[in-house]
Image (tube, rainbow, N blue to C red; front, side, top):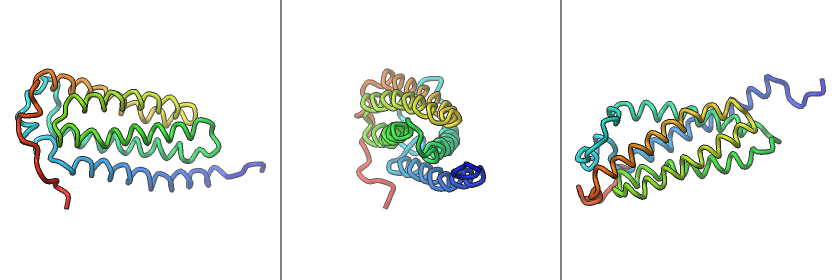
Length: 183
């Protein structure tokens, strides 16, 4: 009887956090992908030489949706772990790496800045590794939920690097759009 909260109450608290974090991360990720034309919607991207390992266009929204759900669940687990020592650090690292995540799409697809996008995604990868370590100190399951994300952004880093190599003058390939798709 010395419990502060029952297991049921803790599950409900996690569920409340997840009902906020998962849709929020999905929405922000979706909006970052709608600010500029991405993938095959982008004349610039279609004109680029791409590495053979580049997945077909339909893979990206499926993978990113899945990753954003897992990221939201991981964050909800950490937010729900009140009093845990590494909680604040984990949340801070998560927010910073996620801000870089949201910045990557406009940099790459909108500004056509492949080198800067590569630097951003490498920093995002390093911060995600640090986030995962911090999350593991709080909830191991939260850390494991970030592993597929780490693998994907590592792969995306290699793709970004190879696209930069294959397209040394990519910034001038097609003029950047003057407007966004959002109203």
